[in-house]
View 1 (cartoon, each protein chain N blue to C red):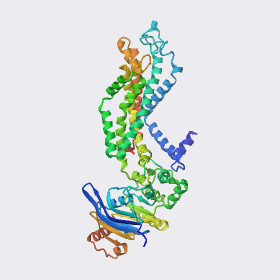
View 2: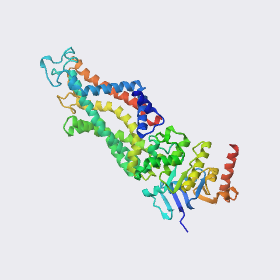
View 3: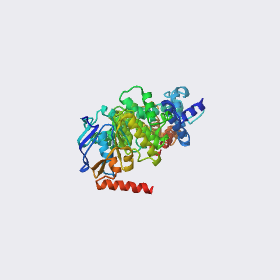
View 4: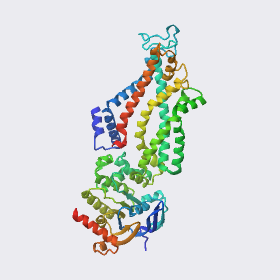
Length: 299
Length: 250
């Protein structure tokens, strides 16, 4: 079955649109598989997503249940990662917190990548005053330090996960617009785009079907590399009390509450730190691997 | 008298303050193949791009079949006029299969029988059906240029604009593509305007040619006259001698 698929996808004499498309995807997958760091990254990410998804089944305790008799307990057989200042099981909170943190990342990326792609390709393809207007707008957002703008935005709204997502999204799109514009500029005067123009296609069709697909690979790479910084921004907002609110077990917020006893009961802060570190690192590994595989400049 | 297929009067094109095409006038009857020869920077490709509607900043008058065209062309224009670009490596979308590249025109113009039209276009340029679902990087330079020609043919145009269609190819493949273009003109009743810096390529494919120098068309003559050495302008003779010198060293 797998061998069949392999032979079918790698067949140079593809006989259908579907086969050609799968052949391309399969070659990308093979190239990615040859990169051990990228595979480690992918493995960690898939594992984290699974753990977060299955948190209700895997967590030994309810993440909100307090046990004041047993606060700040060391890791033991009952509580594998110990308990926090209210006696809540840290492992359970970590698992449930993964849902919030990864959810924020996914929500931000889903909001931000299409906006950046659209702004960048439109600016790059049309040029002239459209380009100037859109790029000055992008510059305005780029000029603010990311965390500060996010903080100001959250402070203006209510602190919480939704505001954190909006705030991060608001500050995360400009680099994508820049990248998409740069990619668009390199292809917009190429002969294959002129050839498409000579079919009578509208500029919108050219952007959507011919220019944007060429910008997607570098955008995917950048998004993957950015996920680490989105996680850290989300955690920072949580840490500063502007993100997820207690008792919700967001990783940054967990570190924030644990900082008071970080020297005496270090294990309370340690596990969310490691979780953030691992996931950020994994996204970076995967992003690096994807860059090697997808970046069209390396063809 | 019927209108010529292409009629250009006093075409002028400037990039900023620099005028690169200084009043070109030419007329191509239906079914004829007209060559534009000149050195790099003589403005010959610029003229062709203005004809194709890719350069929209020109003055003067361009008429196809007697009807003047605006600088921005309507979609119907491209069913009549198509172009083959110089570089077969740059003129095919690197992420699209040959099938997608060829069928884009059909999809934009809402034409049916996509499979039949794509297969007929591949047949016309003597490409096997097996290339249909490959990507451009899996083809040779000559095959790519055939794909580019097939893409132009799929619009069933009356006019084919050729921008140095063979200069990026190996010499052996050049002859193949030129012969293909010659055959297609007869079988499809096409009118050609071809730009080239190579006098012998133009003489091979064209009936008449115009010589451009510094943005002006300094001479127009038939290929018969060219062969009989009846060129009058010194630049034309220069180009002919240069071509012969190159041919004898090769």
